[in-house]
Length: 195
Image 1: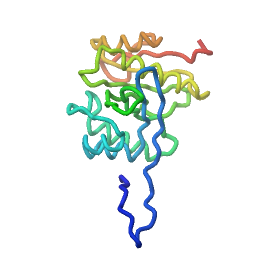
Image 2 (image 1 turned 180 degrees about the vertical axis):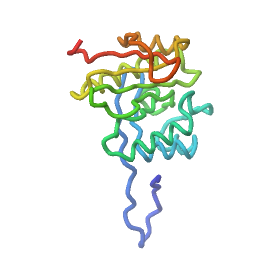
Image 3 (image 1 turned 60 degrees about the vertical axis):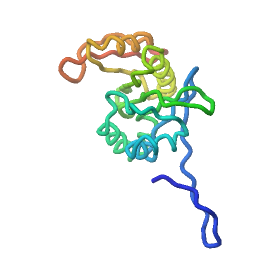
Image 4 (image 1 turned 90 degrees about the vertical axis):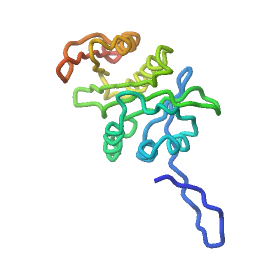
């Protein structure tokens, strides 16, 4: 639900404001943690997402691999309070007033019992090959490893997606073998103090 300000009247009570968004800053971006309100706005369309993020949303949103089913998965995931911030993070250019949504990065859930968490990312086509995915993964790695429960961050991709593999390698991930699905490969990086 999106809260909108109503014009004050004698009979109007105070209207609740939308929840504040959790953000992380990186060198060139602001990362905004998904919450149920934000994902619901994303499902409603570009205008609703733009309003809640206070940023321009390109017409070709969403990026590859982040379709409506992925959004619905995130929404279900966020029903569990323990999953807060272990879901998607929206990537916005800059830190000023004229911001644009670049893509998405995030986790597929909180760490498992071994302390492993899986990360994924997708950047809109016009923003690729500019280091945004690498920067987002770097920032979220730091955030993940700030939690003592996280021992490893992994990622899976198809072996022909060399750009994706480059993002992982630039962030210290190493090839660990086959992934969870046929034809998929897995990369991982260990917690710096456990390497």
